[in-house]
View 1: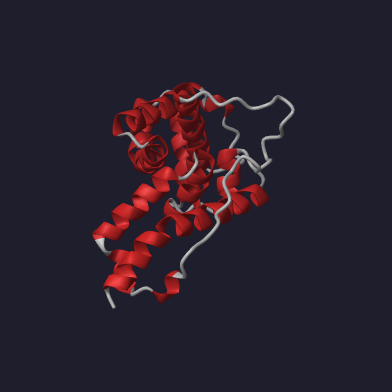
View 2: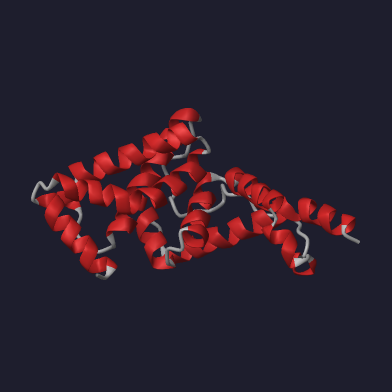
Length: 199
């Protein structure tokens, strides 16, 4: 069964009050939602709370889901919003009322980087390198982190990511580009040190 047909059947069952359909929905989609939440929140307990909030909100508002995007895309959007609400409560962010959401001036711009093409391929798959990469992803600003996680790790399309985050596709591309550059900059010293010790 295709994902679209599976989503359609799940929606019909949930709207009809089938409790097992809710369980199926959680089973199918919770892993991806948890991965996103964990990378945004950087705390397993907070991530679990975001997952729980996501599914509770989704089931309560299932009649508002119009089907223009996929069910998983809609769930990612709810999860992103839930995570952002929690992060805002943690650290208040003051944004002028007249500032447009799509402006990117508040996001950092990378300054320098090392060319990773010169690095041995095995270096990129070492567990230590993966841990360093996870740390670097966790240090990205939440707006960039969300785009990077959805596009690169969850493998959503640009269109799906834009729908999930309520952004234009151009804003997704811009944020993804900045996230990649910041990761390269953040990891440059790590990989440069590794390259020098391998000589």
